[in-house]
Image 1 (tube, rainbow, N blue to C red):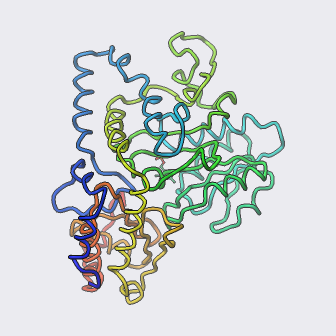
Image 2 (image 1 turned 120 degrees about the horizontal axis):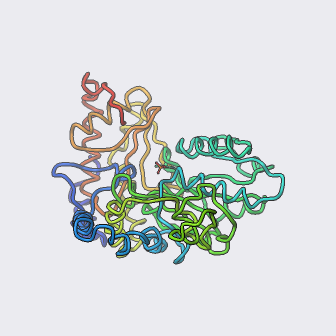
Image 3 (image 1 turned 60 degrees about the vertical axis):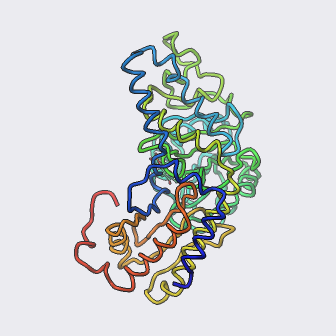
Length: 409
Ligand SMILES: *Cc1c(COP(=O)(O)O)cnc(C)c1O
């Protein structure tokens, strides 16, 4: 390959984040480039979950008063600095899908004008559009898609709220959050930012961008564990806007008063719904304790250096094998490399997995490789690229066993 092993080892020696790798438990012989789908396990997570199991055994119901019940707000405050928010602006609860529904209802419930459209992004992760459509069925709003690549300003007429991803899950393209937020507000609409592929992948500055509403998940770049809860952000000045539609008892102003009628809590707590899993919150809290030590600019620098290294190691191979590289230029890139081969993409990813190189595949034809600076070294990236080159150049992916499809891709 054009890039020497000596050079990548030198990059590793100079890497200020190199010591974080030993804080993660990764299986032997695996090169993991799928932290954008499910983050790796922080070693502290096992101890934390074991501790919560012990607490359940020994303390029983008392555990709810020993940190379980207020975990959504406590973890929200731990999340806040990672996404440029302040204490009291973030709650960790439910999943992105439900949090979008809550925010759609909360935002539209405050509007008294005749804007009746909910706009979501064509080409975004499907659940964002699905839940907007479901919301519109019960609320009577009209749902529209912003065409992929369409000019946002031309589609904001009559729009009450638009749902946008900061980083697109397929292409890895990064939107300018400050400029876009300003544009949407100037057109009299609100925007809910989906940070699924940006929180923990790059520095995010919700307050600095003037963002009022955001959601994101913690099981991807943030390493919270399978099924770890999502987060929901509402700017401090926009927290007294009435009900959110999933008005459950944990979001009540006095959940243990057991009153007949709902009254929303006066702060970010109103976005809670019902009982959560103390076990998975403890895994996430362990991960957030690692994040508290991370310099996000160093993370960004390493992320871009790794995705560039991967592409450099594969120079020439894309054109020679009909693979399209969708990866945006570095200034507009999240933390992934996106390659398309509609005919062989699935089989190439399967052949790589058989070699211990885990990326993922998304229809149609998309091969995604995520770069997670806390537990990947430059040498890992170099080795993964070498496997990619070998799989493609040898035609190994053509073997019948790599054509078989499982339920989860
Ligand atoms: C992963 C992802 C989701 C996941 O939604 P959940 O409700 O947490 O399962 C939503 N939106 C985007 C953009 C994603 O990438």
